[in-house]
Length: 167
Image (cartoon, rainbow, N blue to C red; front, side):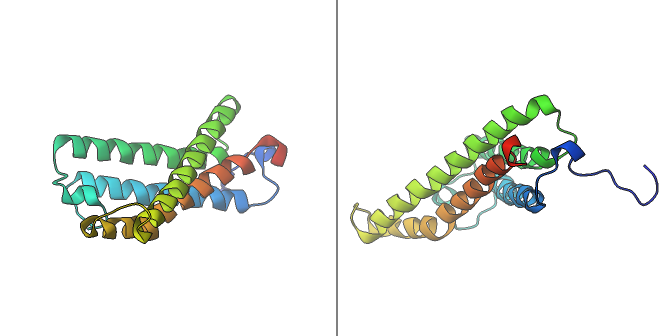
């Protein structure tokens, strides 16, 4: 490359109508990296006090393997978000990747929404929960459910905004 010139993040024929799509992809990538880091932290034996499985002696081989796999999948999803706005993604892979990102986003959004409803029912006593587990429903209500909904909103919106008819 000539001095002072950088390769474009988005190919000229793939430019979205506005630059907000780039920021959306970066936000989705950031969400995935933060969430992956937490999975790797748990796999390494770290404890935050924010998840009931940490309390259940989550240091065995299955716990470590599940968190390593989850972390890798989250990183792949984040890279996929960047790929949706990158010039380096072959045209033939854009549609399948967009569908996978949309499915992941909708799945995360539904998981968060359904979890939110369930947690509200548990906290209010509509569904029985003993005092020992009620605080976990509160943690899920204020932390995990909104976090899943944010990821779902980021990824499903990214898939929608990168559709060719919206460029």
